[in-house]
Length: 165
Image (tube, rainbow, N blue to C red):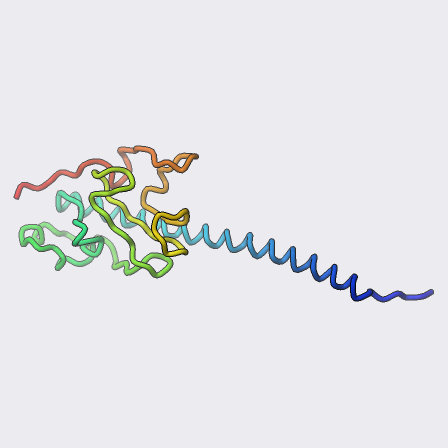
């Protein structure tokens, strides 16, 4: 009986098939990794939302854009002494950046839903704002079409009461 070896052509076909399968598996795992990073960022925004609500209860307002989210752990960012006296933080541990080592964008009044809510935005892996990979504190309120639905029970929705100064 004669043993026949694989030809070079047959080996190249097998290697090509294995490389194609490897590429498909790699792409699948990369997208799962990106999704996991976005989910972790949403969880961080949930923590910030909770801290923002405690800040709002104590201060009767949300942080200004000048104060930013850093006021949740740094009282010195509050200009008015009367406001400093009401501050009962630290509301959350210092958060220097998002999961991609970029600053978190904070806007109040917000632009994504309406002016009565604040926006927290991570620019995602591409680092560019207003792209599909952006992660916001409003993501959990998106419907199947990707539109943000109104939800009065969501932290940051609804007009905070203002203090009489």
